[in-house]
Length: 189
Image (tube, rainbow, N blue to C red; front, side, top):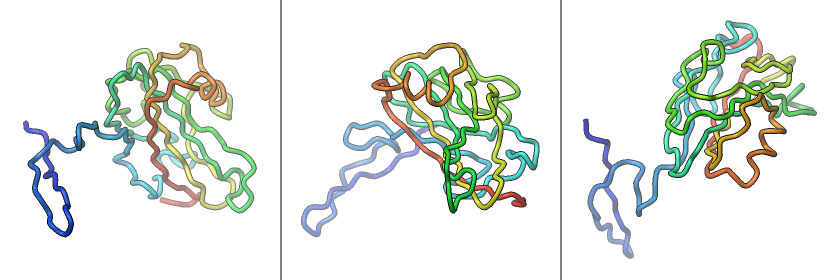
C-alpha cells in the first residue's frame, strides 16, 4: 500500500510553483511532528463517559505518530489543570502516568491500563496514589484533560513514577512533545 502523498509548492511573488510530490509528513527533509490522537474523542471534544468515573473508568484508545529518530522510550501523562473548580483551579490533578513505552508503539488500545501495556512500559502513580488509570471525575464544572506524549532519548526507571518524578527524570531528554486536550463535565453522555 502506498503512503499518502502531498504536493509541495513554492510561492515566488504571486506565482505558485509546483515542486513535486512527497509522502505526507515530509517537507523540506523534516519528519512529521509527534502527534497523539484518539478515536474516542477529538481535539477539544468531549470525553465519553465510558472513560470516566461515571462510566467504566477504562483508559481511552490513543494513537501515536511521528515519533522522532533517536527515541528510546515514550512517556504519557494525563492531567487536569482545572481541579477542583475550573473557575478557581488550585491543583493540576494527575489521572495517568505511563513510562517506558517502546518507541515503536503506535497505539494504546482501550483499557490498556487494565489489560496490559506494551513492552517494558510501567504505569506510574496518579494523584489517587494508584499505579493505574483513573478517569475524569470533576467535582464541579467542565474540566480540561490534557493527554501529553513525550518522546525521550532515554529509557527511564522501571519503578512507578509520579508525574513530578517523571518530569525530573525527563529533564534534558525530551526530543518531542504532543498534546491532545478534551473536556468532561459530570452528566455528559
